[in-house]
Image 1: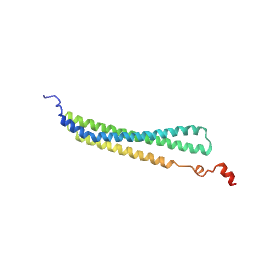
Image 2: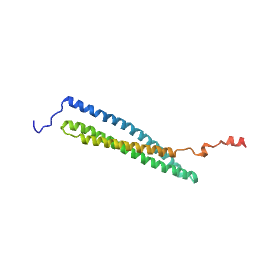
Image 3: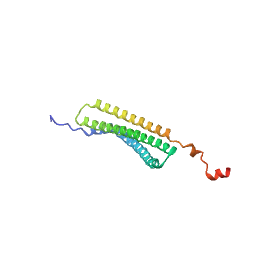
Length: 163
């Protein structure tokens, strides 16, 4: 049997599956986080489309305010795209971890170091994705506010009755 790959026993495959369960659950969490990022990106894009139309017909202070808002929306899109990229890269690294777990069992190779390094890389990428997501949330929180003219606006009927 020299030159042939020895086939793993069912118990060895079962043990490898057990080792792969945690990274697979991690993939599910990454998928959920990607869903959140994609939803935020979609909302930002929808808002940008509304503002784009308004910018083209606005003038004066309103125009300046809308241009400022659309610049922030553009920045938010870039930041969310960065978080999505990092998250997908993390997911790819986790997939490679699972593949290497099974490959090491099939070819009886000692890939523990490579698997550990890939897992660390996946966690670093995911941490960077979370950090980038926090940056987007803070950017959104700093720029979302209700203007004073709206907060303290009085209806015409109230203004006339008070005069």
